[in-house]
Length: 357
Image (cartoon, rainbow, N blue to C red):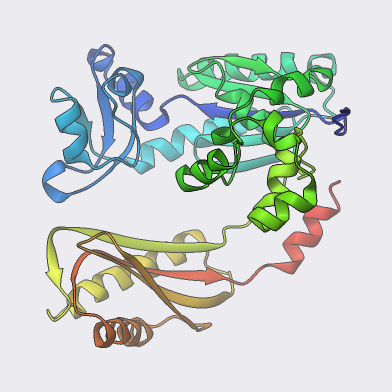
């Protein structure tokens, strides 16, 4: 079977190693050989943003409840989040990216795709560019980065995790077929635990297993995901690096140290969240058009509910109405409460993106 993609594309995926925790350890070398995580305190039922590799040996992971992480690793040092410090480091790192290409698609503070297909640096070698970028990041902010180099975004992202931490992995066009055939289905985008179990029930454990099925068979069985499985299992991905990728939403939330009752007077909490949301909107997206507002509630049994309403100018009254709508239909204790907005797609920005390619 011939697996094809555009062999001329050279995509780099850069992923910083344990970014928040690495910054804290950099600034306090005494933490270097200790299990370190960044997140909220256990007594407030918070979760971890990230942790270093020493902590991961105990089973600690990002997005894990801090209290549970402390049970797995009693000596875990949990430090508070310092976003200003992390953003400052991220700004320096992205300045390094911009030295090599204008086609940089940030995914987060510590992760980005770079299209270096037409870059003249390092004699046009994506591998040498990735090596040089990692070296410059270390010289600039004293942090390590892992990189993946491949003909497309899907393979580059997988490659960046192949030799972590502080590693580099390259998948050349002629290596795609051999690389993907033994790739576990769990590595594919869109395949979580439930989907992986369903794939296993059909005897699909690796990409070579999926390759035996036609596109029609996969879409009949898995819907829209089937098309994605068909392409990914063959190492195909035609998505372009989008340097002006837009934020689709913005939100704030609060996890309570003790559940609050739906019947309690929650107006003060809602108002505090609303003020925080307004501040974030003003700071990060002051000129974006808003499509709707939404309310997010996680109950004590971890059931997540989201209510939304069309609204171009968010105001506190709209969130009050959404909360009352939820309260009228369900009596429960609340573990988490969040407010947010979805933005309208910016057609002008999209046109500018398309002109770059």
